[in-house]
Image: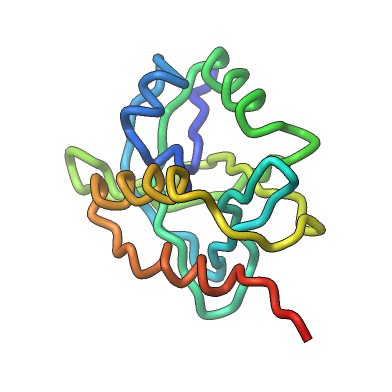
Length: 154
């Protein structure tokens, strides 16, 4: 069975949560999604991170190797296919231990674009921020996503 790689950009950057959620998963490395931006969108249950294409922006991500069981767990957690859909993409990953760059095909969850902008709970934002700190990502990206996700009223 070929290895499956998962691109995380939100609460699944949180290593403690991922250990619980996907016990077989292991961190492969980090990367950036060029031409993508972060936004908080959601539903009546809350607002969560998603990515959308936007020229000139980048999103820092971690890449996990996941088992078929982990992928099934992620599908349930992410509300696939109704809340989030999956997209396969080629990505250049900087190895977590070696620092070597390797190209891999990986999947990412993207929230359906018609979902409304919204504001995250403090708990969800903190879970995402912990992942950002762990991987050494600049939290300004998260803060910008909060600002970019405010609904504009006329």
